[in-house]
Image 1 (tube, helix red, strand yellow):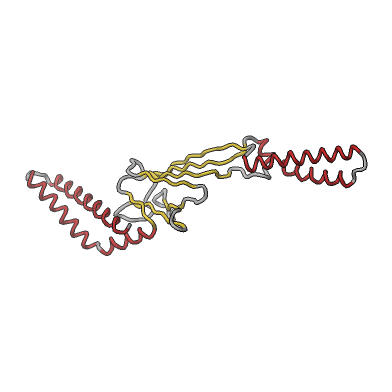
Image 2 (image 1 turned 135 degrees about the horizontal axis):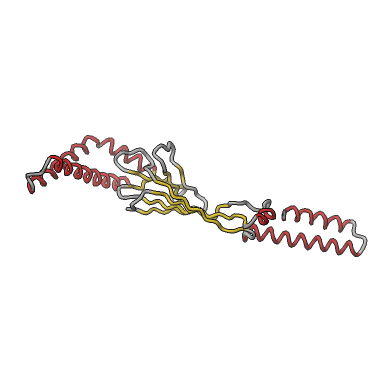
Length: 234
């Protein structure tokens, strides 16, 4: 509406100036000029200072699953952009999700919180929206409703998750595949040593207790070996 008024006031001002022959024609042209100036001021105020708009924030929380199907660990991946100071994150919020989603680049802030109890993505998006239907009527042609102000993404990840670049993830998969047999032997030896030590302190351990010790030892070995591999590729 304000845009149309601006256009019409310019046309009216031009017409009254061209055909102005009497004093009231001059007064009328001044009136249309004033309308043009005022309406232009409202357009500028709306465009630069978001006059007629209000800030609205939407928060969504989604579960987070590993970006890639990798049995040894859960991974959250990122892709550096340009000179590496900026990056986008690649993530999945469901096991059956085929392709990972990516965070945006404009007005986007990403944060990582490690050792959390729940794996989740908290998205907070702020928008400029019309204050009322009247504001929408006046500024519909001069401003965009639901215009993004900023987006804040917080990735909560539990212990055992790793944040790697795409290239690092490829190296990780390659290294673990190359050392698969060696790691399996070392894992078995480590677990047996743990069980042997436990049996020396308590020879009467039941089969279930022995199995539990082996499981814990295996998990410990996998965790530590994964940390070592990741330290090598970073």
